[in-house]
Image (cartoon, rainbow, N blue to C red):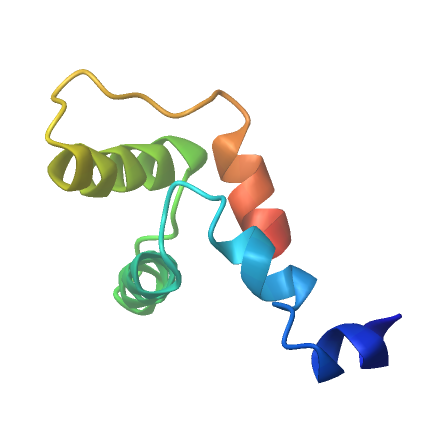
Length: 81
């Protein structure tokens, strides 16, 4: 149960799942802030823009200039955030 897991020091599922994504929580927050900033300047984001920005972050992170995220990644990211 959840209480038993907590008592025994197990990691909550939400924290565990957060480690499985491409982006860290800080990187996700940075991407969200970028989207909000763009919108405040009159530039609403598109899935293409979001994908390009996320890929740029991830390419720097993994030092792979050819890294690409999945076609549905932006939809999943938006649903999560």
